Image (tube, rainbow, N blue to C red; front, top):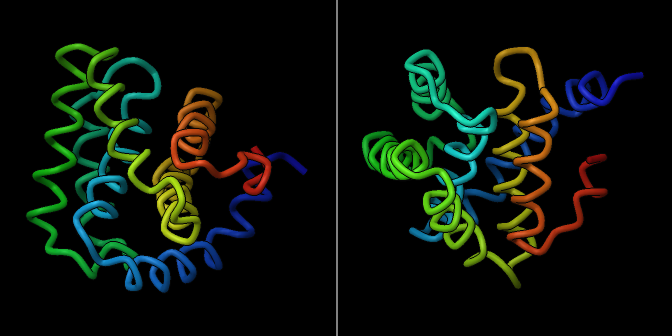
Length: 151
């Protein structure tokens, strides 16, 4: 069975877990890390198209796990990270990874953010190698082994 098929099987469970964990970690660090991972996934292929921005914005405003935060604040933070990645990918990536690394030593919050990344990566029905790599790097930034998510 392909990795994406395995992840799809776990997606409902992940969404439920992500909301439970997100509600426990309702703070700026968690919100920033969540939007950083969303921006990294959107930019995984090196660019963020208008369609990717729109899909990610739709995900942010409709995802149950993120509903504990005001959507306008999340979109503002996503646009911040996405804008940094678009203007200078390397420096933008450094800033996004820094936001993620604030969850090191907070394993429950870190795992919930990674689950958000996996969910956003598969929101279009595919989880390509660039998106997987972005999630792996995010795992490393938060101090969670990628193998916990079959990556």
